[in-house]
Structure formats: structure tokens, C-alpha cells
Length: 260
Image (cartoon, rainbow, N blue to C red; front, side, top):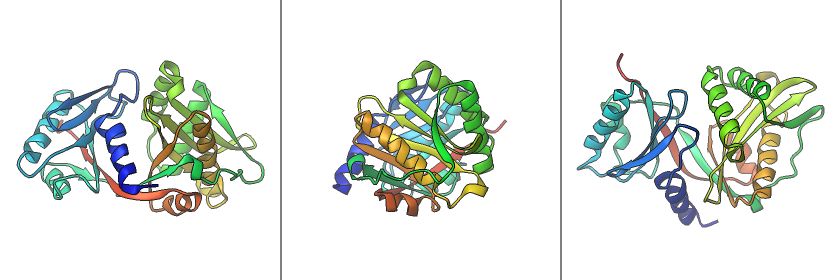
């Protein structure tokens, strides 16, 4: 894989050429910024920018004003190769809070190791209804220690309005949900994104996460996707590297909460 060419393709197709990621969302370009405005339970934020030292601060102020008018917090998704080089510092100065840095990892599906099976007694099943979505959200809350009410609504919206663009799965030990994940396919591109892969604490280190990645990768291959991308934490990066993913750059969410 040509790293520079793949990163450029990622920027072009998934960032500058971003598409709305759910019902009620819209993507628009305003100057040198591409942003998504979505319902309150959706993802609101900046996905791409082409700024420099002369226009960065004004662009930041414009996005703050836009989302504040709507009463919504939002995220500026900053990548390691974005300019200007001090954009992160400028965002902090404007009132954003950085969350933990992750690694953008991409692989060609054809190069992946896809024969990974779940550990004994565990099976991976698709999620297609409200009950399954509830279980996915429950696993998310147990795995990440964070409220997942937004995920319940967002995933239900996607499965109802455009089920061909999202794949959600559960790992079950008997009838007990022990892992969950989703994959988002982007129409008009060769990319699919892996999101939300989590395992409850008691089942970590047994291969559940690897099995969830392999399962989604097989689905991506069946649907003709060439590339898989994931924002990897420090915990998941080694697993993904062993499966065949390559780190290309970093990504850091900068979050702005409007003053109420």
C-alpha cells in the first residue's frame, strides 16, 4: 500500500468529500472548512479543513458561532498532517478541549488476516432490530464507561433509514453480550470504517475484539470495499497491526461545548 497516496485518497473521499452519516444530517463546505450539522444526538463537527496562519482563527470562530446558534456542542476532528501546524493550540485557545489522541489505521481488505474465529463458546451475530441495538449500547456503556443513549438513537436511525450503510454486530457468550461493534460503509467510495469495537472487561484478552474486526472485514469484502479504516486507541492498535492494518497519521477530537 502506498501510504501517501492512500492518505490522500482518504482525505479526498472521506473528509473533503464527506457525506452525511445519518438521517437529518447535512454536510456543507464553508470557505476552507467542511462540516457536518446533524440532530442533537448525531455527530456534529468539522471533518476537513485547508487553513493556514492567516485564516485559521477566523474559521474557528465561524464554526463556533454556527454550532452555538444551534445550541450544540461539536467536535473538530484534527489529523496529524492538518495545517497550520499549530491548529490544535489555536483550537484550545478558542475554548476547545482535546480528547485522547488516536491513530488512523488503514488496510486493504485483501491483505487482512480474516480467518480469526471467536473464542470457544462465543458467536458473532448481526444486529437488525431495536432489541439488538439496545444490547449494542449496553455493551458500549460497560466497555467504555460512557453513556450510549446517543448511540441507541443514531444506530436506530441508520438501520431504519439506510440499513445498507451500517453493519452492527454482537458477540454473545451463550445469551450474554460480551462485545459489540459497528461498521459504516460510505457510498461512492471504496472505504468502510470500523467503529465502537468494545469488549466487556471480563472477556478482554480472549480474542473477542479480533473476531469482531475479522467478521466486519469479511462483510466489507463481500460488499466490494477495498479499504478499511479505524481510529485506533493505544489498546487496539497492536491488535490491528497484527491483523494487517497500517498506521498513517494521528487523529485527535477537539470538543467544544457551548456556554449555557
